[in-house]
Image (cartoon, rainbow, N blue to C red; front, side, top):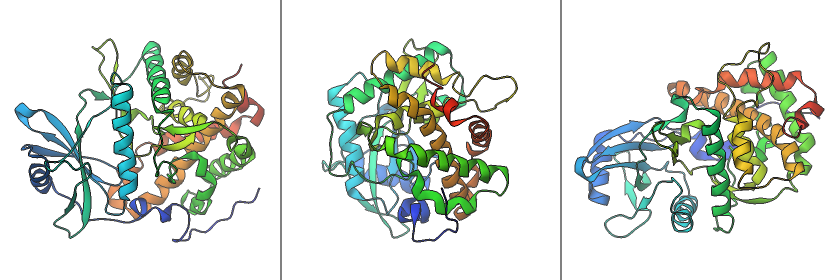
Length: 358
């Protein structure tokens, strides 16, 4: 396989402007005014770090806490409607699932538009705040990881019959489109890191025809530890699944592989660990209690987890150069991923294929 080099601003993820174009920042005081005008909520706003939009925790005292999201001006209204419609579908289909609820504004609109002080027309959303600790800030046991897998499976079943005109949108983080990112290889540091990424792309290209034949449906597609809210004192442990911004119609195997990749250790000792899927297998065990996977999907999932690591490396190294002021947040998980890619590079294709089937 030959992977072309040389990034062009008209290709790949640059066609997704919310990832490649800057916008004017909405401050906390302005966010508070927007929330009061649109939703009648008066509270104190605190900014969350995010990839592409302006998101705030809104503390309204007796009224409770909410999350106010001000979308990037380039995000299409159809795609935002897809996210709201999906969350409403889940609320009706499986009200016990720990997902946020969305609110309409004072005029009954799901997606009101505001003109910000920066002169941009942007879509606002208000959703419930789910209390707890993001999983990336704490630890979990094997039974708790199994619980994560169970919720992922239940989400899959609850989304199985959902459709929307925008559900087939292209999401750069969907590993299905990994080979569209090859022009970003020039942003990966030369040497081992680039070699590991290239090898991941080559192996992904080999299994892509099989992936194209896999079962597909609308899925969350971003079951990472910063999107899972937990409470160690709660018997259910997982108290929130947030951020449906990358939801899309994709392969079931892709959704599972993303969840497993995000359970890989933040630090990795090649000499003292059997493989990267030690903890991830707990998630898979819980998942398989409620949802089946074919043997072919189980063989593909490790390649897709490897591919998701390559997606992260390519997108974050590229975006950190475009937005150096936000590089700490953008690259927060990238460093750990290099050791993971190196590990995949060190084992054979046959060994990767057998990781979840032996």
